[in-house]
Image (cartoon, rainbow, N blue to C red; front, side, top):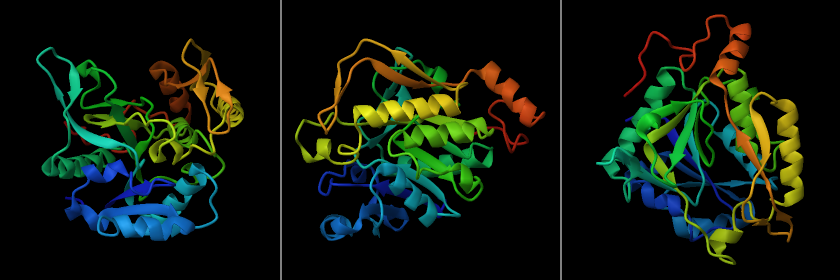
Length: 295
């Protein structure tokens, strides 16, 4: 087991409903950090002090600023930053040849995941995320897929990544999309893991799970503003597409109807762009081409 991978969990207004702790063995406690606002520290401490180190933070008003505090606190470490309302699951290929998630993750498998992340860093994938188990997938994405976007849970090798590229602070929403795009566009390829998968419960309206987290900072206006900023900064990788779907109702009463952002990488265009920066660039083999990727 690597003893320097730290799990970092940002949480806000969700004391008592932090589901991710159900997936983390108590034996890993010394490597788990829960980041909460100072005014909520006592409430969280009463519930979770036996599961993690609880870190009070000040001067934050949104998730981008919170993630930045985590990066600054964990400088020099390998971290897995994961949202508080998620669950981790073992994945497998079923008899029909489809990729599915098991009901849970075992303690042994959890430790194998920690080692796997370190192995991915060793071959050049200095940041990565996970596939969501929303529906069955073909195993083409197994055990990981290169440069496929992911959110809500990301590992970051803060031992090696330039910290100026891992800067969340100016992004109150879509902060994970910005950092992903910033790193990708500078040649840091991303591994989207499917050997283990994520699930996110559908929160019932007017519950602590639903109204915690980013509930009171996301609204239709700042989503639209952020999408325009991302379009301007990353025209090769970011699109906003109109599509039919149920309206999204935000905490301030605003409603978003038809737009959806899409973050994607064209392999051909990306390779062409990267070769202008680094003539030796190879898709998926950035820093350590002498080592084969882990299986």
